Image 1 (cartoon, rainbow, N blue to C red):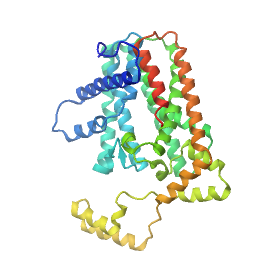
Image 2: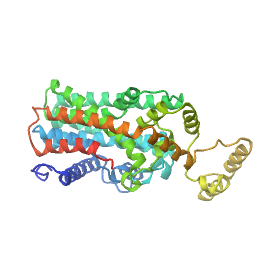
Image 3: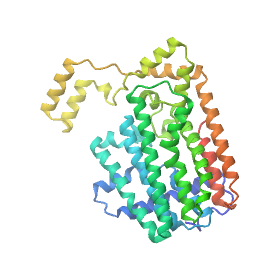
Image 4: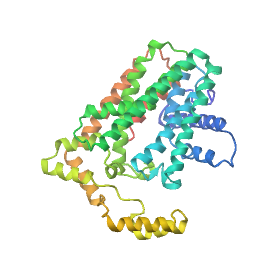
Length: 389
C-alpha cells in the first residue's frame, strides 16, 4: 500500500483516493482475520456494515499518522482493523438504541434481521477485535503492543461512559443542558474512539515517545467536536442518499444535539413547552402506515409471529391506548424553531472554532515531517468540518 499511495500533495480528489486505499487495506485485514468461509451466516453479517461503504476515517487517521512518522503499514494494520470493527459494532448497537431505520442508505441490521441477531453481530465484532491487538506483539513488539492495548482499553471505557451519559439524559428526560454538557458528552462518546485513539495508535505503532501523544489528544478532541456537530447538521440538511441515514432522524428520535439544546434555551416559554411536548412523543414505527392490525397479520404471514402471540398482542392493544407519535408537522415545527433561534448558525460557529483549533494543533506538530501522509491528515481535518453544504 505504501508504494501506491499518492506521492504528491493530497488535494480533494487525492484524499478520496487515499481514503479508498486505506479502506481496501483495512477491509482485507478484517477478511483475513475472520476467514474466507462464505457459507458462514455470521461472517456475512459481520462484513455487512463494513461492506456498505463509508470513508474508513478511523483506519485512515491511524495509517496516515503511522506512515507519516516513518512507520510501516504492517505495523498499524491490525490496529486499524480493530478500530473499524469497534466502529461498526458501535453503529449496530447505536442503531438499536436510537431506533434508527437506515444506515449507509440501507435498512439497519436490527430492522433487517431483528434485534437479537443484530446484538449478537455487534458482540461478535467486539470479540473479533481482540485478535488484531494480540497480533501487534509479533509485529511491533510487546512494549508498543501493550501501549496500544492500553489506549484501546481507555478508548472503550470513555466511549461507553459517554453513551451512558446520553442514554441517561433520555431516561431522565433531561433537556436543560449547556453547550459544555453536550461537548463533554461528545468528547467521551465520539472523540476518543473516532479521533484521539486512531491518531495516538498510529504514532505508537511508528515508535513515537509517550510525551508526544498529548497534542494528538488535543487534536482528536477538537476533531471529534467538529465532526459530531457537523454530523448533526448533516442529519438536518443533507441528501439522504449521500448521508446514508434518514434525514431529520435526530428530531424524530429527540436526540440532544447542540442545535436543539440551543433552540430550547432561546425559545419563548410557550414555544419551549410545545417543543418539549413534541419531544416527549415517540417516533412512529417503520410499518405504521400498514395499521396495527395489518402489521400483525403480516408478521403472522411471514412466520415472525405465532397466532397465539398475535391474539395476545391484539388483546393487550385493545385495552391500552397507544401513545400518539410525532408527526411530520411536529418535526418541521422543531426545525423552524431552530432556524428562527439561529441555532444552526450557532452550531456552525462552534464546529468551525473546533476545526480551526484542530488545524492549528496539526500545523504545530514540528516532529511530523512534511509528506503526502501529513497532507492527508490536513485534508481529513478539512473534510471533517467541510461536509455541510
